[in-house]
Image (cartoon, rainbow, N blue to C red; front, side, top):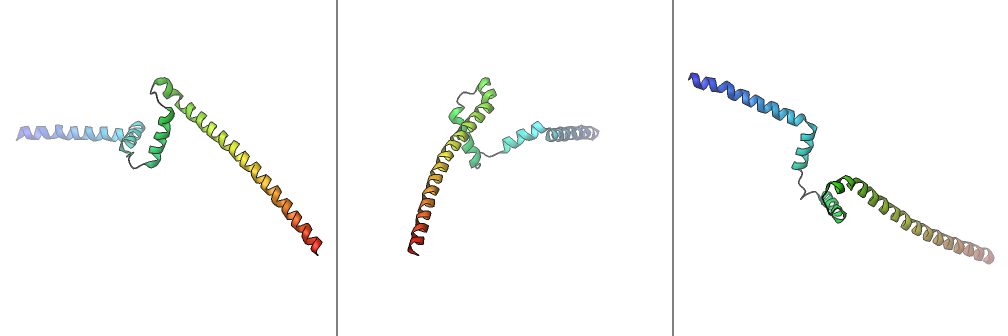
Length: 118
């Protein structure tokens, strides 16, 4: 019986050491982030899958250089897309201004005809 009692405190200390270790891991920001990433289910996250598909188009080589330049590459692509959007939107704006001028001219013509008929 004395041997059993001697074993109990050492088991208890191991449990407290394990709980202290688990507590410190939970308080560690890196561990929390890593656990969050590992707990993420990509199968259900449609936005993440779309982002990964878009990333796979231009991130083909997984090397130190490409990982370091990834943010800059993404920002350059985003800038390029936004510049294209502005260019296309400018064309749409010019077309709408042309339509507005035509409508204004028709309105003036109709007003002129109405005044003649009076």
